Length: 225
Image 1 (cartoon, rainbow, N blue to C red):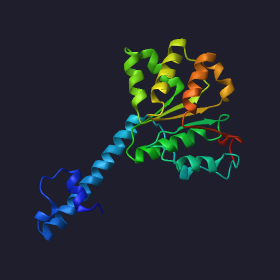
Image 2: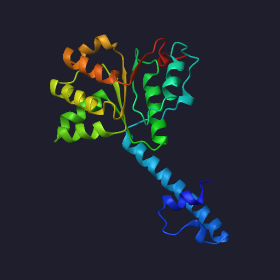
Image 3: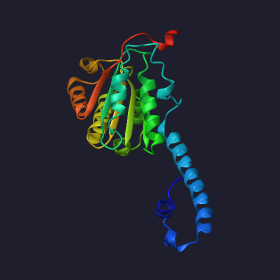
Image 4: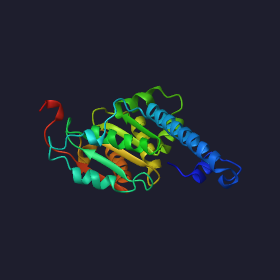
């Protein structure tokens, strides 16, 4: 239960808790606690709708035993950092089906649960939005300011030169300001297949700042158990 003094601050009461009777405090405490819970729930629902996450995936649902080569200790070590307050980039590398998207989605869901605005977007969907955008600068600015931005499935779509430049601008503007998560089937040395060499090098340089690159190996979860 949230202390009544904190509730008074949250709801911006002019008076102080000490100015009301104990009976009134008890009634007000219950009412304000319920209202606070409703507000937090509405906020989370709004953040989920805006996030682009199509299917909720949690870390608690991940089957670590199926694929022991997935580096659980490194994921948990990253979670143990203050990545939502002190931006820490994360690049998950590995073949299709080893759980990169599940982990990335779970991290984004964790961020939303802590009240952080989050966008989860595949490279395909991002390039499609860029192709339709009437104002690319506004789109770049929007994604550059989101506290947590996840770019999923880098490696399956080849953006145009203009789109690649926009992606660089988004990641560059986020450097040391907000957290960027990327999932990819390509090793960093292969990013030249998606971007030109100069752009690939510049993007990797930005992601390396306060960033971690974690490689997933092993069997595909989609292949069945």
